[in-house]
Length: 407
Image 1 (cartoon, one colour):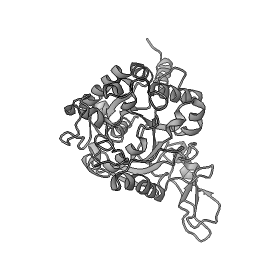
Image 2 (cartoon, rainbow, N blue to C red):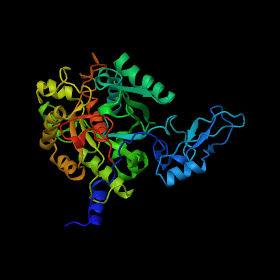
Image 3 (cartoon, rainbow, N blue to C red):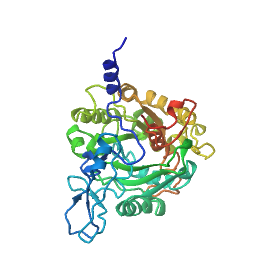
Image 4 (cartoon, helix red, strand yellow):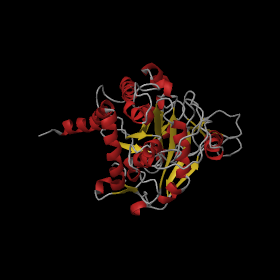
């Protein structure tokens, strides 16, 4: 019989790297700039007018006793300036500015990785638009920008070029700042006292940084704190697919293979101590085949295997039965097209799923313009990750998987 210590060690090994959502004031905060994690009571404040040095919050003796003895979360005591005004700008101990609501709710980091031309920026543009539209309404969710920078960057760099001008987005350069949103599930799912609310920090990086571990250690530090990872795979780079489409099937045409990308990610996390060498990483991994409109139009995958018509959707919660049906289809595609990547995912990521999406619904013409923009299924990978983390409710008969947070 396994000892209690043995069970604890096994649980720690199984949950290595796992980060989950919890309601209410966070106990710890992750800086979206330096990615240092610190206790919420160490947050510093200054006024919006500037000119003053950041000041720490002042806590009463009762605050400290309630935290130490009763294990209550800190009640943040915002300091005031010389004129008695509350200092509302928030900073990490290293001096980086935090989202305005960083002390009110958890921030979950979602990292997007993928080779050059896998469609990361286009995917993000379509994802945010869908969550602001039909997909968000279906699950009764609200997506609100947390910072002015996010609002302006999304409109000028994502929405206007893709949805207004119908142009292909330029190649990602470096590691842009994250898009940060307040994601709320409206109402009180399953009789809970409060609505579920969380900050989502969406990060992505230039595909060329994924070639070497040394480059990844500098450019994808957000993965060290990630609550979920999306691996975007361009199916047109798969030799079997490109051959079926009548293109040169000789090799992956842009950058590392998905298996090389995953290996570099895991090695980076091993070196940082996030995951043991050759051990499992329990962060949810969504493997996302992009540009699946090409697969549909070429008959490589039957059209009725994609629920792109709007007849089947996640309404009110994440429908696990509906998800499993399509995940199994795309998982079998991965197994047939790229067995090495398929086996690595199964061995190293206990919590994974496969997806097929189209960020535009069609391919661009020779001038780089799309005849129309009609994304489909782009929201499902993120909703699945949020369901695994306990943010989005799950429609499932198993009571242990109803979207509740871990105890």
